[in-house]
Amino acid sequence: MPEDIKSMTLEELTEEIERLGEKRFVAKQIFSWLHDKRVSSFDEMTDISKDLRRKLKNFFKIYDCTIEKKLCSVYDDTVKYLYRLHDGELIESVVMQYKYGYTICVSSQVGCKMGCKFCASGIAGFVRNLTASEILSQVYKSAADLGIRISHVVMMGVGEPLDNFDNVMRFLRLVTDEKGMNLSMRNISLSTCGVVSGINRLKEKKLQLTLSVSLHAPNDEIRSRTMPVNNKWGIDELLRACKSYAKATSRRISFEYAMIDGVNDSDECAKELACRLAGMLCHVNLIPVNSVKERDYKRSSDKRMKSFIAILEKKGITATVRRTLGSDINASCGQLRRGQTAVEREV
Image (cartoon, rainbow, N blue to C red; front, side, top):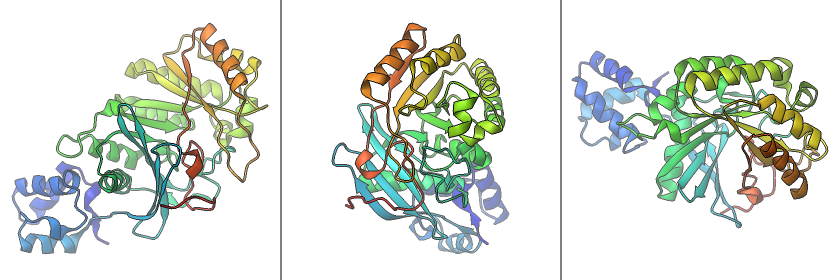
């Protein structure tokens, strides 16, 4: 099977090109075609000799994705893409516009193993990890289709990024490479449902990205009911790992907290959460839980969210309510899945 050339670092590509009897500078040309000009075929590499392009076709493949469906919100400028991969599998990405520019939410797996009760991503089951090039392709293809420059990446789509650790680290290296997209690591957010082993591995990298931890509960009883991952790593162990991560990286952790009516949104929950997070370098991002047709969870009222956030702030915990984008096209947090089953407006 041909090697995935777009997932290679420049150093790896240089070694491969030298094995083919070519000069080292040729690797830089090819890398630029892949990650700066972002071509999808070797034939588009016009300053590469035809003989080398033939060799490249024999040994390597440029894995790309194609747009299966594109959906645009009538409420805002959010765009959701359903992408088909080379093996026929489907993944979703979302592009959102903010005052500071365009952000893309990318998927890291086909399906998800984690089974969070308020999330649609794992309903159809887990299929496989995405390669670095398949994660990159979501960024490249979306930017090209919309004719925009994407300045921020959030790894909050389908899948658990830390369950696909090596491919995600490779993606991060490639998307921040100065000879490619040259994205700042500080403009990347990586979300985890609480995979402690992955948080500890990520800590050793000391990357300057933003770690977002899906907490969604102040104690084990509630969290285990809604998030099966808590049965492996309880909330105390998770928060110890988070504190260690923040200390090692000097980066503030963002705790995501889906506000679910009658489940985790009481004043008592807010007080307990504030006590657990006291003294941490962190921020709490409250998310009105979004509707998933297979689940019966409902979002908390605006009044309840205001009360919750007031308690946190009184206890010294910085908190905000996340703005809902793309809800009419099932593009909001927790609504992404690898297959389209909801009724959506196609563009």
